[in-house]
Image (cartoon, rainbow, N blue to C red):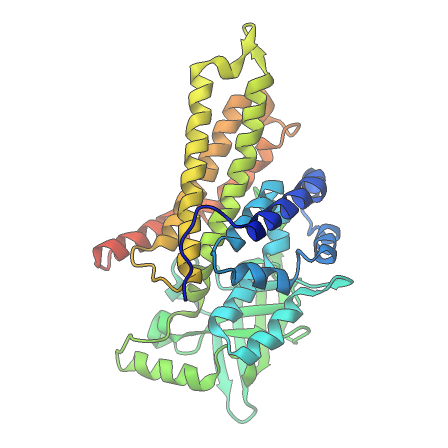
Length: 406
């Protein structure tokens, strides 16, 4: 039974919000500049989050299955209000977990998702590996192959993945591969690569413009062998889906990577809102206290109107994200690509708001003495990863028109 959509979070959601806000203010923010400069995974912060129960399967499961639909958006917004790079290091594992939840059997979910997080004394991370050097927005160009070895009931994976959050340092990798290239995206499947599997290695680690505390790297798969049980959903389900695809029947069974992205897009939008809100608050405080020509700059209509636009867009983006999140939790179909709408608008809002915040701070906003410079860099990725803004518009246009627009 679905819950009624509400813009008034209940007591439980508000308690979680305040708890996470305190963690973000007291633990994440004081460490943000250091780990941004180091461009390294903030393991001490992740471990602190694990000890408090924030970095855990139980916590994210509670938020994910919250019938209000706003559990995950609230959590994401508060953590990323603290800092986007550290926030992504804390929540990056959830993308791999969502891949297993979206495509796996109950047994696979129970086996692999706990191993993705480890324990508070021995934290682990997980990686979702979909993009490739020649297959980003064009998922159909994916070249990583998975070939079934029937004699040994094993799948053999070969290929190179790129832009993988936690790639190479993860305990568990979830890899999207082609099992039948002739079928394009309908010939894809997802596989779990267990910890310590021979043949998987980290390639290039990327030095990024923003979210620098989050590890992003290539993952090289060279003759990686995984048991048949590591095919998410199982071989019987895959064979049925491939048979339908070969017959030209589209009903049932979707693309493995797209199932993951559709489930995660509103959450990514919430991350962007957290960045935007943080930058807006810095700019608002600055405008109230910074004086020029004998008065606070917020007294100037030009600055006040900028802040008004910033706040309006943040609130509008949050409404779109909450709507999409509620729809997803309550199994309401995205008939107008509402998930993509939320990610598109929130990502563009983060870029807009952080740029306006830098403008309000003037020269100070361009320095690392103030956090808006970092927030501006962090926001740039939100019109790129998990579907560029152009791809989101394409998805929305197809949904509302019913035409296969290219």
